[in-house]
Image (cartoon, rainbow, N blue to C red; front, top):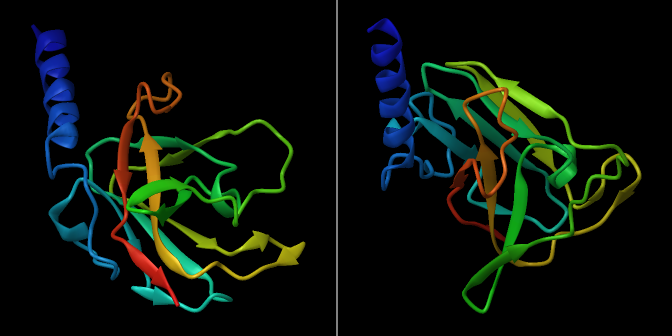
Length: 164
């Protein structure tokens, strides 16, 4: 009986996170309430200069930790996407120069994760961001036994921000 209740609770939390609007993004300004979302991505500004640094925060308000894989944009857990003709595609402007397999990063319940996204290779070469519309994406899992991927993870995106 206890196993059934725990399983039902876990399924309920997972379904709420996957419901329309339940796992979407917050506004582009940091908010301690995370806009009422269970997991959210926020940036420190809505507009950046081409040579700017994007400071981004992932806030986990779930009752359980989440897990995401690193070595994405600027070696973070976030992928940077650029809008081209109305479609989102992966941007290669903020690659991670580390040549190692990706590792899981745990964000505890109620905790935040902060990253700084820069164009070029962190510590090696600074490049400008091309002007245009961007968003950040996160794929996460709620179990350390499941490696998050587009097939078995929850995907959320930040609000759109501009580079001008």
